[in-house]
Length: 159
Image (cartoon, rainbow, N blue to C red; front, top):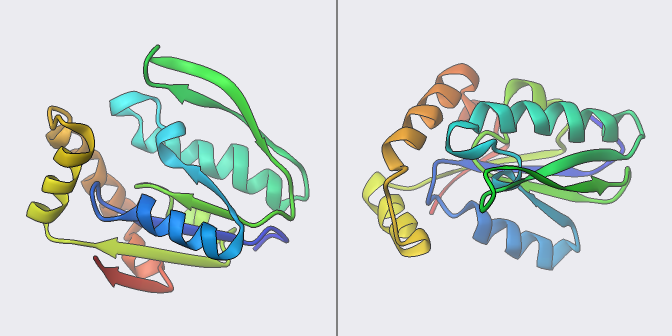
């Protein structure tokens, strides 16, 4: 684990990760990084997980600044550069944030669960469209099968 206090919040789409991250950030003053900025589009969940571990968590654990480019959804390509400094508390929220590799860098890990119909309704309300739902669910299934993030979590919460 690094000198940077890192909280990972994972769960399927619509589980409440962003809302929980915002509440925890308000309580602690931690910066929030959204996995949405790390995915390489709708096919990019695994890419986002690797980018988080290799470009953000590993450098911070080594005491170095983390530097990466955020995904620009409007353009469909990598956009602006971002960075995080070692030592500043960090919350990372999004599906794929809690992996076997990322867990070793986190001081706290939370897995959120909600019934699919609840999550689907939240996603529709949030996005106004669910054309991506099946594609994303396949990637979530792959992530869960490979990492079993609920078993890596300090807390499993129903939302």
